[in-house]
Length: 218
Ligand SMILES: O=P(O)(O)OC[C@H]1O[C@H](OP(=O)(O)OP(=O)(O)O)[C@H](O)[C@@H]1O
Image (cartoon, rainbow, N blue to C red; front, side, top):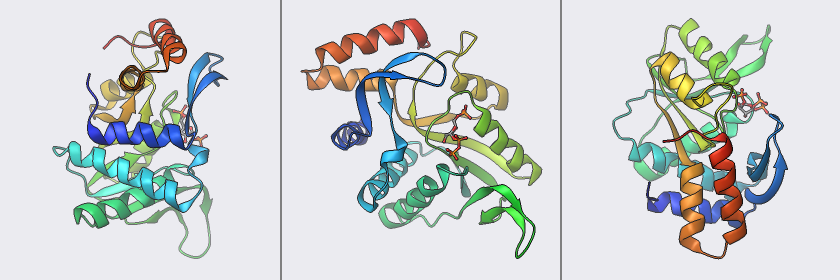
């Protein structure tokens, strides 16, 4: 697997902003991870603008994917989807509608639990990460209830981790729904980047050890 220039730029940016950190982090799964991707740090205009550009660059790279609407699951998917459609419009002249769900149903005013463009046609789901896949499965159900068609999913980082079976949660979704799950980068590419940069020897060996223990073989 080799890094594309936007992936290298994304990793350089994420490390410099301490959005991607190396050390020892306990995950919800109980696993002790040597790295952590913290979306909570996309908390100012410049970083939010930058992440939207990286999602947009990835989508440009996946040209075969034909989508009509970007859907950002509440809550963290909302600013990410907003920032990505701004980047698609400003950088690639693609004016893509977007929408998102409310976590609580609103029973006054316009009502409903979808805000933004109607969910019609081919829908791309955009979120930060997939862990067990629960949030994405909920979105897929919402899209189907609206008679729209999910055509793909994009996340920032694919950790490529196995759950209870041999496949990862991402692969399970791809198998169950027959749609691709894309990511700006994945664990393999992070490892590639650390090798390429040099000077990360200890983190690199911890990352490889973690990959061999918990991750899928590609
Ligand atoms: O694959 P899963 O196991 O569902 O985990 C991933 C989801 O969890 C987080 O959102 P969360 O549901 O915590 O909501 P939030 O965006 O409001 O924080 C994250 O933003 C994903 O949507």
